[in-house]
Length: 212
Image (cartoon, rainbow, N blue to C red; front, side, top):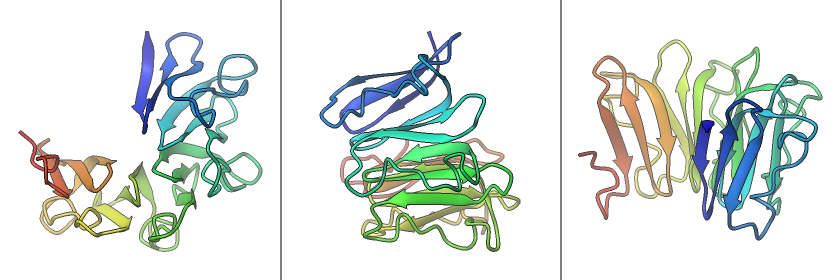
């Protein structure tokens, strides 16, 4: 059985119950479905896992270090010192199209790395530790989202071609906030605080931003 699950471009990953090892399956063209010994149970295990376009990331048990594997053409599989255990650790992790994000342990600051064509790897000051931090993180194709500490407001950055980085008032802190958040290709979704309602925004060509 499993304690955590995630789905990427053409692969999936989970953390197995008991041993807590990271297990992935599916397309493995760049090694995205081959977790390293540090999290696959050989020399270490995992507490959180995320699958991106052609890469995967996890938080190592015991150390709390962010570890990624698979495609690294934009540095998406090379976590910075602030979360890889050198100068800091991670409490949450997300993998997007060609970038990754994490919440730093202690400071709760959002840290991102990898492809940054649309600013998806440059968190705003409201969550990067400058003027605010985050409790949850999500990474989409070319955008990222987080829930701000304190206000619980949904905040997104990066590509906004379909409005995917513009959370509505019902979850952005204006008239409501969020408890959970997710980012897809060109749309995003959140669970509204209090009501528990699912709210989505962005591309809706096939109804992906219109919850039933």
